[in-house]
Image (tube, rainbow, N blue to C red; front, top):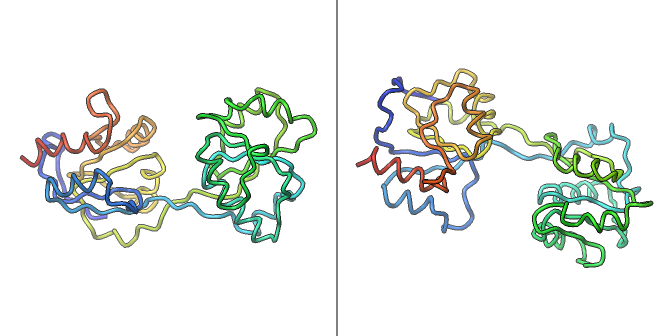
Length: 260
């Protein structure tokens, strides 16, 4: 990725182009579009990470039979998608008696994409699995729980299950990996926007010799901030804060000074 040379002193300089390290929204209601229109800047979207299924060869190494499990713990839409994708690949039809434990109602509703929604067999919390601990306690004797995860694991969920003596099997069914960004090697952006640590890791996997120089860095969240600091990046824009709860507001405030 081409970067111009600069110093760290006066970094509130005009911005004409921004690359957002996420897929472009399907709806044009994103506040980023208002930002683009207001400041007449070029706004591009590009996911820096991909989520892919574990291939069959790697999956078979686990020697786990999905049909042996009577209850599935779903913690994300990705977990739902890749679980049922693997079932389809293996020509597995989950029993109608299978129970599903979901951390939120949104995930529970998403299950309707793949299975008939039966409230008596689908449990969900307001925000966390802890909310449905009574359902775990009621059925945990004799139940065989499967937890589909990514290569990043599900530490909070695993800790919750272990703390409450709920026996389960963790099974990696998908991976989060760095996207191929090689086509951006000769393109310059005035600002890069990151929403998670993996985006920054992907930047350096693709461009190990990346030098920030004049490129402004906007980050959302403390974990993203810490990853940026590991690479000695200058964080020009940070959200959320008391003054700027959203990354769009934080960038807008920066542009108010830099692009005046």
